[in-house]
Length: 243
Image (cartoon, rainbow, N blue to C red; front, side, top):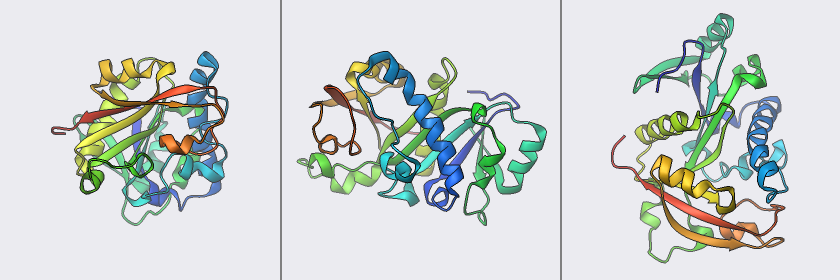
């Protein structure tokens, strides 16, 4: 993957993001909700917003369980020289597989810098968080391996075909930072995402559950209070051999 000169991928550590102002969280809530609106309109299954309100941003994306080990990537376009100058006051550049990632300097504990960008400059988001099997039980006794499993969350793109390059590089970078053995993605079957992740990103389906309209969505490992018609939820795994 090669970024254009006026593009950048920002690395947001969730524990630092929690120190940011409500304005920054509201911006990210709007962006991610906008990304989920397309399948909402197309399939008509999910009726509620992906993130109900900015106040539940961290819990709805599952970042609240272990913020220190969770991360959110922001893909920016059309960065002006002035904006890049502001970025470099709080970020340092890291080259990874030919792609430049921007990681905050050690003395920076928030992401107020995002306020210098407009919403239409954000063309992708992808979050990763430690995966927990508590809600589904753990019959294989896998507790010792939970720290080696990370789940994708808040994945959106606003440019056709961007996910084919953005998701792999975000995944690989995450695996280079954390001791990950398995990546996990939970997707709605009726949204035709099983084929997308399995054929294009190398995942394998491990399980599938039925989520009844009006039922307790948390029993399937999802956030609470989802308003939706009946749907099936598939859990997909991808083994990480080496990043």
